[in-house]
Length: 112
Image (cartoon, rainbow, N blue to C red; front, side, top):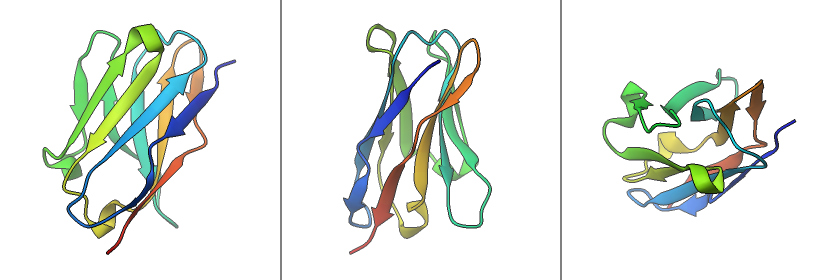
């Protein structure tokens, strides 16, 4: 069993930045990812990163987000810049290891 704890969400003004963190309770050998989900929408991939550092981003990121991970800390990060109101869903951390695990999510609200 793996527990994932996200942090870093909150209220930010349009154009602002947030850095999300997701800490896993044990070593994750597979990819770690960030997804987002808005009400009545499917959960969608934002970015993923392998243990070796290979990354993949959704088209809507448009160069504004950066995913990274610290394997020694079992933690994945998502740096989000130039946030806009459409970037307001809950962000979920996903870890692929012996199984697939999800965090509880951290909400991002973009508002003036």
